[in-house]
Image (tube, rainbow, N blue to C red):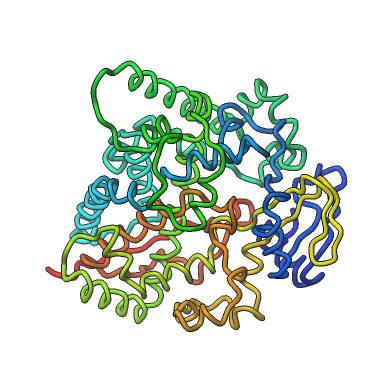
Length: 465
């Protein structure tokens, strides 16, 4: 893994050893997993048919630091089922429709900034998308207006940067990656280690900030908040009428009111995961559009034809079929979640393969997405792979940017909505362009999986001057 980087390591394993490969964990405490699987029928068994057996992630409870240890990401077994069932209605289509005005406000702030850059002929790097996603997450999760483009020193901004500043080439980080149980035990010492100081302090900040916001709301006699923090306070009583069929199944599980610690942990996970996922995907997608002007022009035409200059909404962006194709192909090439895993909670058999209790099964999403047998010429950006006709020909387990089954990404609807809204706004106003500083072809970092080696630098030109 050290030699290849995590993405290329997974590619090497799958191309060398086939659809099922045993991983020698040894002293690494199975952090890399025990078995790697790419066979679609086996994936369906693990992720859906035997989801009750493979409920848990390969996240040792002894490695989780407060308040993350109380979040839907970290908890296991029945507590996870109750928490997931409780939280699922907070991401329903109805709830997201109520948040589109907040998202649009953040998008318009970014557009005004880009107009200034266009007029000045200035380039910008992919951090600008992080400012947008930061503002969206702060508004929709915590009800806090940040305007991070104009307030780069806001505590939310500075701590989000710290939370995402992990470098696997750092010796201290690398040691704890392979021996994760040391993290919790060494937390007081790690607060003074450069590779961890910022991350741990940001965890503390977001945990305490969430608790403080909760205290204010619990004490307030009046006031209405339309954000995830408020929704988590009342999640156990929500209707499930506007959920999809698969989500309704999850929502049938037993629910319970969330504790302050659980809300703090989930608020932090929503923030970090939501910020990183949408930020990185927007950076890659805008790069791909800038380097493929014919695809960008076709997408601009669709946006113009469907929206006729109107502001994007939850309902109108869902009508943009080519935008969906472009985003799907971008997330195939650059899936932010490059792998997921599941741990067997009992002995079981999957398509004839005996899997003992405690075995960590790895699903290498990036390697699956880059398999030439599934996607000919896999490194080529080709949105035509995701036409309805092409999708119908393909096994659904060949494309999983948000995972699959009951433990898929709970916030994927929000991530897709905020990405679609800003992409529409950008293309209504600008054409994305490369410049002298743009790295072509783009190279991924080995020390930070699914991050560009260098900043993605682009320009925009106003369409209507």
